[in-house]
Image (cartoon, rainbow, N blue to C red):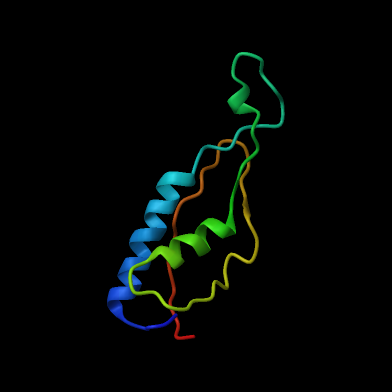
Length: 90
C-alpha cells in the first residue's frame, strides 16, 4: 500500500467497513420458495468490492490485495463480516 501511513490505513478500514455494511447479506439456499424468492439466492462476497473500497480510501495511491484470492462463497444463513486487516508496503 502506498503511501504507507496510519492515516491511509485508517481510511481503508473505514471504507472496508462501509463496503461490508453495504454489500453483505444473509446467504439463502438453492431451493426456490415462491413466497420468499430472495431466500433462493446463494451468495458470495465479491473480491472486487474489497478492491473498490480500498481504492476509494482517502490518500490511497497504490495497493494490492493478497487475500482473499477469490470471491468468498457463503453457505446458507452465513453473512460476510470484516475480519482483521493486515497492511504492508507495496
